[in-house]
Amino acid sequence: MSGELPEFYFRIRDGGAVVFRVETETRMRRIEMTQIAVVNARNGEVKGHGSHELSPEEDAAIRDWLAERQALLSQREVDDILRTVDRLNLTATWAQQRATPEELDRVSDALLLAMHDLRTVLVRKKADRLKTNEAAE
Image (cartoon, rainbow, N blue to C red; front, side):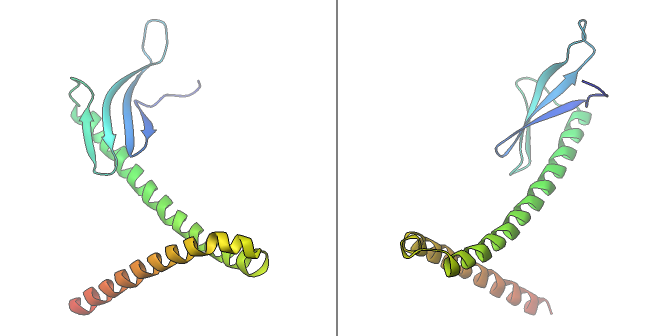
């Protein structure tokens, strides 16, 4: 490996990460990684691994990483939704121009129910926002 290694390594896992301290000053110049914590990105919980007590510096580094990770995941979520809008437009084109009657039979009910559910949620949320905005004025 070239360059300087970070002090901590975050192994991403579903809903969070496992945090390791990266140690390069070993006798045989090997890289060693010692697990120090587990992070739950959904609720912000950080737990020291085993009997390891997190130092204030470790805790600060983990919380900085967590804030960056949560911002990245939020950004990705919005990007995924915008891709879904694109997919819906492409699906409409497919249904109008290329789909066979058998293919439409196979997907229509599932699509209609999903779109109805989404529309219901969006309309309800928009109405709630409008009520909140009117009450604030």
